[in-house]
Length: 278
Image 1 (cartoon, rainbow, N blue to C red):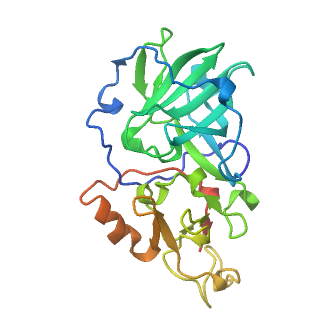
Image 2: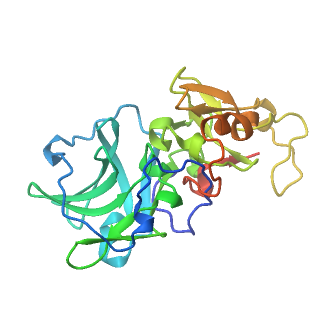
Image 3: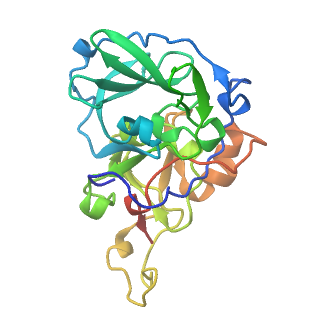
């Protein structure tokens, strides 16, 4: 993903992991909640990085009364062994955190050592970018801040810092930015290619299901893609195995091994311009 927030329509999605929790917010459009501390301190949120950023996390689709949820986020120290991001709220004194509290993903507003719940998403996603429509975010939109209401519009997406917002071999995604469960949750089209660095080996990989050789064509044109001639068939990372597997068999075989019979009609997010095409 490149710099700046996404202004186009939400990116196409497709993922398969069903929530591990039988109870999720989509079933309770008017669930009452009590304010809850997120167990973090803004004073501790120095913007340290576990690895150099190759992308920026962005969010969009929040209603006007929660507009401070939209925008770009900075990576902060992990909370509960999961990613933690921070951004400024309505003023620089207000910090907005997205973190996992051990049970669910939460977005909290922090000011003067007080914390306020703004949104929540249940499910088994390992990263805000891989929260699916199935376990979609619910936002507190009423004035009393006591009820969570599901929002199909609000979501996160990962924007590459590569040229034109596209991941490349020289500027690959980090799985820290995409979400380590990205390939397990996302159904990629044949033309969608992501360059990323394998967490296991540190090598730069591509996610293409097929190699591109002589005669490979650019979409919408008749010119052979000189860059694609050098691209081998790709692999996709499985965080459950901590290993990469053939992209050609990943969706139909490897992913099914972990989630047999699970629905495949939901997806994780990446803007259209964050991927290259064959």
